[in-house]
Length: 477
Image 1 (cartoon, rainbow, N blue to C red):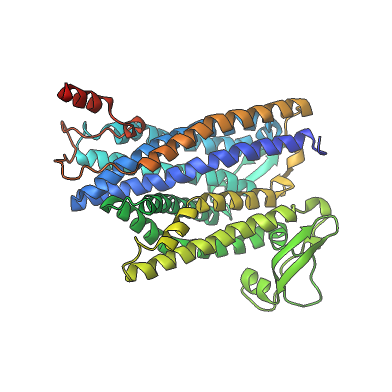
Image 2: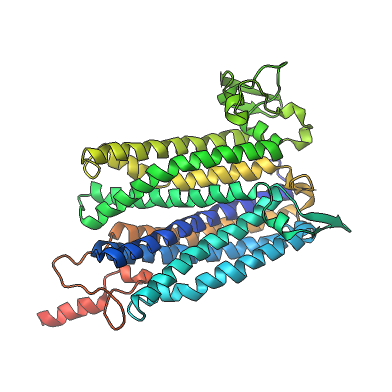
């Protein structure tokens, strides 16, 4: 069907499941640190706005965390079911790295998550804040190990092959492989930026609907400060990451640039737009800027960038896909930087919370961080092809021996179940966002802490409290 084989369906299935999964950890990483900042600011300033925002976003964090755990379990099983040959070949490296993630990050998160979500009225303030910080650190440790494993597949180091299996010889080299620092920084920063625009979009939605209060304004203000500062930093990290990729995976860079061949000693131009044709071995309708490719990728005006024709056809990534996925990521990145700069301009003129054109832009930019993460992930993973472990094992040699029918049935099942399950979860999370922070204006509030009553930090607490409704009904009777 459509010229696809069992291997193609296995790749599509993995891409589909990981595309769902990666969205949840990204928001989890950002929200966990955001919650730690909110609680820290509340403890320092005693400003109830930060406390109310903490309770609001902790509910969304809980739902998102749960969906991330569920979708992550599927990813782990797929290594054994669909990619058993890869697991047999590289399991001595990837297995321990993922185990370290469970033993450090997941255990840390699980140990303190309950205190963070349900202990607001049961433990002291300092212990609760410590728990929130530990959960935030746990999400970053999880990112560390996951990126160490994936980066090793991009730039493998510290091993030898014995009897057809990878055997680690230097764990420091395995973990801190050449691409790891850049990819870790790039992914962690992307999670913070994506969360900032998610939070900012939520605030913009409420402001556009006329719900203007200190909590909503604080949400937008903090989100835009994060966008202003971190989005440009992400661009710099991306530049360093690109230089590292050019050194270790030049075919990927050639595919990203749609650059097929060099002419004499001419510098490499930058192709802004075009359509890379893998069969014709050229980029059609190319819009080029002379010298700029060399300047960006080599930081010089005379050095050339390796071209796709420098590599055998069987070793070339699919330039058609990565050319455009990379440009989607970069284009959204520039929009994020523009949004941050516009927010600063409006802030100086005291119009940040009232400029409707800006608020609409902030609203529409809500999913931009997540879309950029997906586009970047596609660029990284498809750009590594045809290798599953770069230079060592081809993707065609890594899959399990399943039939086309088996892969078709399981792929359909995954699509149906994922859209039903995670669609419901995302819908519920958006319902929480639409409710907004609960502000007890004009009412006496408690600061929380041992023995003090406060709205529980659980997802279902976003719904109207039935006990309150019953109490009001009793008073009327």
